[in-house]
Length: 419
Image (cartoon, rainbow, N blue to C red; front, side):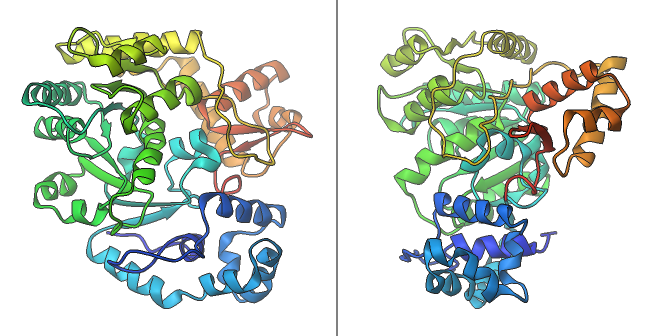
């Protein structure tokens, strides 16, 4: 069942989405990601939500944005209610759901890792719960031979056997081979699409895994949108942000989306450890990525071998973090530190300390909807200042809460932070 759009999501769609069902959008008035982030900052400063722009005082609220974008532009975008209703009807008929960055159901990994680079709107089809599970991202070139296709399908089978989610870009070549192998083996798959979400939602081959809740497609772009090189490049961030580790099966040298996404991860974002298939058949692009800091893929033959390889890489990355050199969008709040990637390992019984930490995490996620000082957190938990400080640091590293400055306060990652 598709959940109704929240008022916040309706407002964000009106500001940023084409809403021209089945047609290419030619409008230059839609707000870009950077434009929307400026809107979000203005609303936060006034302690408002996007939904306030379409409420009873909509015209008055729109005046807040007039000095930046012009009143006529904002009012024209917000007046597209009929187009929105048509688009919603079309999406619902194709079992496509929509969430916005202002929704609690928006994937936490994207919100905590990408921050203001997270797409304001996310369209999807399938079980959205898969987006919170992490997994192995498998990416590579579109043009591959039969031998490499068979290799990648077998890799997908191994990932499925390890009961880990496989994440890929749903493009032809390596992406589809990995997803096909995992699905055939009964595994879970996330397809991050840059175009044609509608087509994927209706495709006969996808029907069964979608109904079995083993497959979810997501896109930051209109479900009817066609291929766009820029969109294909931008979706790389989403693929890596959803994962615990990544494998580049094959990459061109210094060109193409696979190369660009891997370099961005290795030299800027550092969300996850990046593996590269090595050896004589790896190619020039793969060899260059290894020189830039990627891990050699150990060619695991079983699911248990896969688990061990990923755990070792995650531990190494956590011990030897690389400096983040990527320039992000200027924000009014201090940049968050790069999150430590979750270690992929066999499920095990939690120790008493781990159980206690999970309880603390649940408590503070609820209590810190509004910013609190360290001393206030000490009172909430009833523990020493040193223990509270240790837990707060751990939760900041996990991306559960964020640390604000001037003055220093802590706030749960959620809609109050990132609209």
